[in-house]
Image 1 (spheres, rainbow, N blue to C red):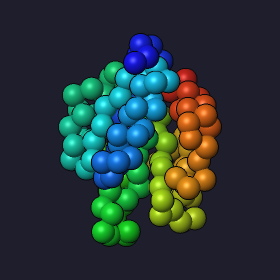
Image 2 (tube, one colour):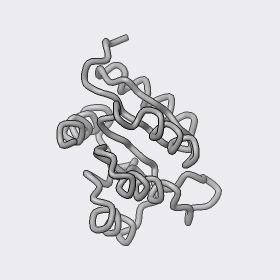
Image 3 (cartoon, rainbow, N blue to C red):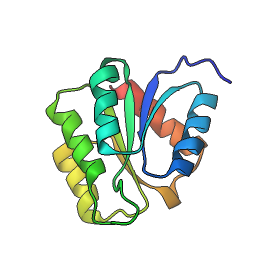
Length: 135
C-alpha cells in the first residue's frame, strides 16, 4: 500500500463496488481516502475532517433507484455554503447538461465527469491532483 502523501480525498457514492474500487485506486496513488455512501455520512465526515480534506469526489445521484436524486449536488452546495476550502469533482453515470451547468455556475465545482467517459486510473488521478492543488 502506498504511503499517503498526496493529500486526503472524500469519495461519496452510493455504490459499494465503486467506493471499494476508487479507494483502492486512490490509495495506490498515494491519497488517504474517506468514504461515504449518503449525504448524511458525507456531511458528518466534512464536519469532523473538513480541515484535512484536499478534494471531494461526489456522485451526483446518491440513490441508484431514483435517478432524479440530487443529494450529491446538495452536498456540493453544502461545501460551498459552509465555506470549506475543498475542491469538488462531480462524478456521475446519470449526468445531464443542466446538472453540469448548474454545478459549474452555482457550485463552482472543479470538474464534472461522466463515469463511462473517464480514463481510470490515469486521467482521473491527473484531474484529482489538479483539483487538490487548486484548493
